[in-house]
Figure: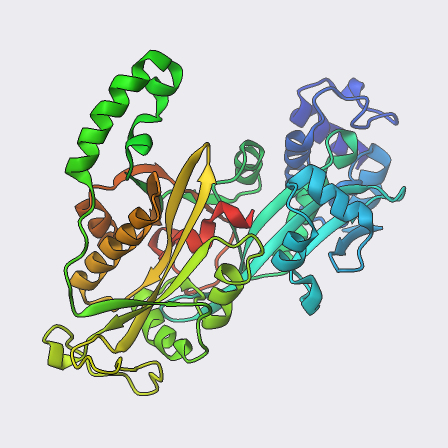
Length: 74
Length: 368
């Protein structure tokens, strides 16, 4: 799953997969703003076939947290 | 922590965020807009971070959409802001999803640059059917436009020319007719019988009950609205084809005038305020007997006359209906710019917003 999430990140931010790891966060990825976050949310939902709850969307700001939330959606 | 509903008892930090991050309108404005004294849940939400800071806010103005065949809960989202920087990332979308869950039809008009960038990514759609129409009604209204603002030396000759032009374009006082306006402080509950008739003719449109009109145009803390009932004469005056409707308790003939218009057939709301050093007049909203083109023409003419008498520099009207647009065009209004309506999803049987009757009542910036 982590590999798939990183693939989504790579596509949304236009950066190589190696660029994303445990330290991935809005502060460490250039261009991670509100608009790009929307694209990330939509891309993750499409990739994993889920719909994040309103409360979860602001939490999708690290690889580890995204992995936890995506797992919760099965 | 997380996304919470705005209440009168919400932390001061939320109201500070509204003043600094949304608009400095004061507590009275937020209490009115989000009905905080009335425990009306589901009107506004904010995001509270673990450290107690506010990450963002979204506010809704709920209404009811009357479609031709059905009704639906609808809401305009009118305030949407997030804290700048990393702390606000993702908060806006979370709040928007919370707002979507609170109603059947979530909408917004125009939208900021960010809104226009974000909404299409979330598969929202826009229609550009409503438009704002403008009539310059004073010499100042005619000259204080682009070139004259940029070149001061143009001002004197422009004012002289505009005064001449104004003489030619001044709106004449409407001739006596079978129609009349009666100014009211508030719309009486009995107006709801008229609304019930009109909504069938004007659907799809948003709620215009006496309660909704009073909330938006009488209780608005910053004021500026004028409210009128539209009256039409009965058959004896030779102009009105329909008899008074059953339950139209507003019918009342002024004493001593056998031909005076007596039957309430609709409403008109006007507003004046100041913008960029000019006095702006607005035709906020109107309903009338739809099958009567002479009535809508009279209504627009009368509205412009009232506003002209209040020395407005220009008059604006947002319209989406062909009959209202024809009446505006007849008075030399110019179509200025579209007012996009953004929407996400529509319940089955609800027509798309490009068919809706939209006015400033739906999109007045005063509410935002």
